[in-house]
Amino acid sequence: MDVAVRTVNLRKTYLSRGRRRVAVQGLSMTVPLGGVHGFLGPNGSGKTTTIRMLLGLVRADSGSAEIFGHRMPRQLPAVVDRVGAIVESPKFFPTFTGRQNLRLLADGIGAAPGRVDEVLEATRLGDRGRDRFSGYSLGMKQRLAIAATLLKDPELLIFDEPTNGLDPAGIREVRDTMRSLGAQGRTVLVSSHLLSEVEQVADTVSIIGHGSLLAEGRVADILGGTAAAQVRVGVASPERAATVLEAEGFGVQRDGEHLVVAADDPSAVTRALAGHGLFVSELTPVRADLESAFLALTADEGLGSEADRHAGNATEGAA
Ligand SMILES: Nc1ncnc2c1ncn2[C@@H]1O[C@H](COP(=O)(O)OP(=O)(O)OP(=O)(O)O)[C@@H](O)[C@H]1O
Image (cartoon, rainbow, N blue to C red; front, side, top):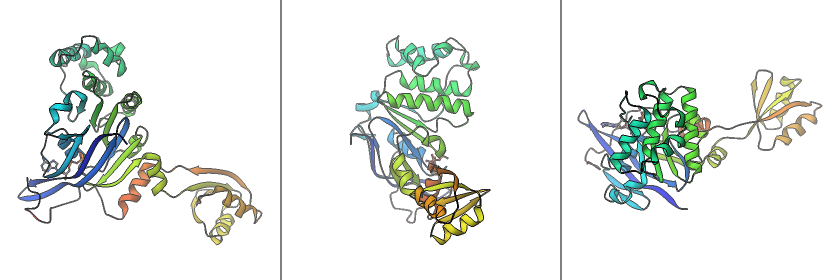
């Protein structure tokens, strides 16, 4: 597999009120080249810290981080032109148009003048480029930020929680933009605590909790590996049907007039019911989502958000 980003045993602790707090704890993750990679975890699980280490904005205590095979932050100059990132909300001049703002940035980095219109088109702001930034919706502001990162035509884009604070329409716009960037062969690394959001856009994911990797791979494989297959069953006598299915060894839950049955093979459910003269009027697979997979992954470990974590040994890994 060609790799865009790799971290090995990355660790970062912060000193906070005299105590050392572990933010990232031996994190090893791999982001494949091309497509959208979701970086998922609850609030406080270490996503921003990891991204900041990748970009050389904070120093790791130990471990390594690479972008396109170059060690970060030491070899950052070798890849800086190939990477665009939004880590904090970028500042734009409110009274300037979106186009003027981009123009200024393009001049600053020596991008070709035609690039401004290209990035406005790429982020679907082509028809609003001549409007003032102050009149943009939050979604448009965020897309302008993405447009700014595209000015130097980067191969890797890193977005930290890009849909934070956006309404559903804004979320959809940013999601569509990320999807089309990934489809162009760029690598988009996007962090989020909104699992259902990432599920809709990411090809692959790394899921972290408490600063360590819990699962990584293709979204479809993670869903398949963690969530049990279930079918929703409509049947005239749900009480009787539940008794029959339980007697046959199926896990059954009531959902109103329906049953939700744990079964890898839906035809086994219809067969069992038909054998007792019960006929199924509806049989639909219950789609596993990343949210349930994530909860299943973190359930045993008590991984809540912002859980108190302190380094066991205050001198270990000190920066
Ligand atoms: N500069 C800092 N000083 C002290 N502690 C910090 C600092 N930055 C982050 N932390 C702590 O490190 C842990 C990880 O934070 P981080 O911001 O990396 O997580 P996150 O997954 O990005 O969360 P969020 O989605 O809320 O931004 C948290 O417990 C946080 O309080």
